[in-house]
Figure 1 (cartoon, chains in turn red, green):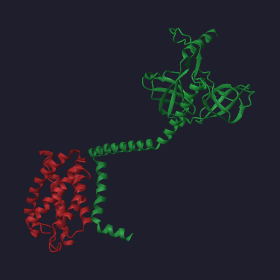
Figure 2 (cartoon, helix red, strand yellow; figure 1 turned 90 degrees about the horizontal axis):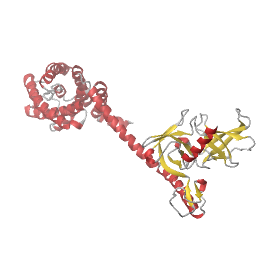
Figure 3 (tube, chains in turn brown, cyan; figure 1 turned 30 degrees about the vertical axis):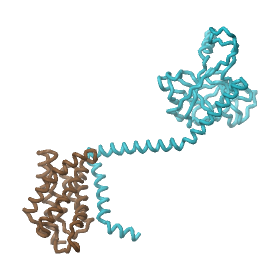
Figure 4 (cartoon, chains in turn red, green; figure 1 turned 90 degrees about the vertical axis):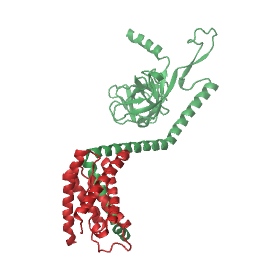
Length: 172
Length: 293
């Protein structure tokens, strides 16, 4: 636990800072369809062996931190908690034969390869974004708008996910 | 208990998710105006639909009572009709016999004709009060339904009030539970008449005054309308004498007694509005007398 606390801690701070200082301002200045949500990467890069309740609570924590700086108390928190659980489901779907061995501390390209990482993150971010925009609208009356926002944000976010991962290539 | 704990542990992630999402839902609604507005609107719609369903359900449950009261009406009408056909003596003086049809002067043939004294219109009470000092009811009939001020309102069980204000589709009825309501009532055993008033308080009890002292009134005696008011037909049941019969403290020559109403004023639903066809004629005669005084 100790040797992977700090990498995750810095990732938490860094991603919240980038999200609220940079990416949030991009949305404000460009338009409401220009959304990039990078902070769920924190949840994705949490240790594979971490139990699901902790994932949910940590997802809630980073979501609430983003919320506090963007004046939407609860919306990101809800999406973060949901992503904590959806990570558990997606990881189970992509688990290697015999389950995760414990040799790979986190689900990053350095350990799992780019192809698997991209498959997992594509699904993971799609679920997160769809949940986020649904809770943001708070009604399925605007289902078309929710879908459009999800797809546009999905494409933009995946570019940034690739950039971030290629730049830092996290190992734990 | 152990099994529930095991289940919680095995599905810990999901349980945590549900709890956290419930908390998120709460804070979203609490701190975000837009989501709060949507939530309030939606719960309003849901609450409205639930109320409507509950109303429909209780309407359905009440059908039996409704049917019971309707069948009573039916029985009453059947009796009245039968009497009218066979005996030609109408019940309760709701009609009278004229030697010839004075309302149709062009008819040259002199003949005996049954003329109704009263016409009945059905109505439903749509608002009611019994707790104020002066109580009113609203019924769903108005001037377009031939309703006019000073018509009496009765039910099968007793009397309800007097129409006071009339609009196109609705009318306000002064309840008998009103300080100004003064009903001319009679003890059917003696034919002695007095005034029935409401002194406030218990909505099922009224006070009968101005019955002369020499009548030996007992508890349980029937009180009916006297028919002297030109509004209520004669001998409609009002209630029964209750409790002790005392001397009127304001006027020692008369008695004062409590009367328990036969119509529970808190459950008035279907009513009849009674029109006295000859009321204008009777009123103009009354005016002549009061002018002489």
